Image (cartoon, rainbow, N blue to C red; front, side):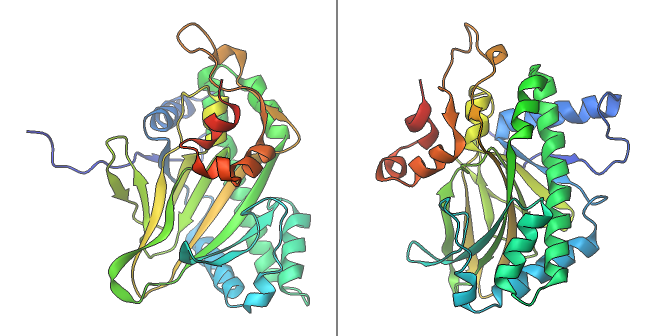
Length: 314
């Protein structure tokens, strides 16, 4: 008989102070992280030395302040890139509402968004969002440095890092106010390079395993779900595949979460030559990340089984 134990995502500790490149500990964590990304497309990172409980509480307090604003104010969060600004009241996902801060690791990006939502200012929101974004950028860069070292493509990653743009997305789901479960967000893979998701106490996020089993991710103040996006799959020539994930809501409690997304701006993304050989023929042509996002929201992009392959697959 097969095992009745449900699969679980690996939990990897990024909170140790001695996690520094070149150390044995770094090499050990690097092996765990790359193996998890190759097997699951994601893993859970514990990161409580960088994002302590006080900051966890502060960013979700800031999130509640944001969503308590009038809808007409939130709707001024307009971005030319689809899904980067305000999204809400959508018939397909009526429980979902989200806003995004572009260039979230820069003071200018955080301040521009804050002043748009609060013309008289909101220092607490601006400072909290900026600090949170910068700390998650450090986690993202650690993980990607580990991937690039493992594959021997450090120089290629340095080029990408110089063109990296970060989006911090505030997300809220209404409770369906009924006992039956209701879809909060449809199954999808992220169109980012990488994503880091952080949840408050209400469950709902589910990730699809390769055995087609959906597993529910328990929220924790110290836990961050590090997840590959479609663009990472193209860059690694298919070695790392993004996982499908969704949100299922139940009960009447609101659910708050945060998504921190990595995008490559003003640089053509292409698979490093080191990752192409007889066993691994080239799978993706060079492409522009933001034009790929635009394609995804076309009729052809929405119909495609795998939008990145439809857009730039060989």
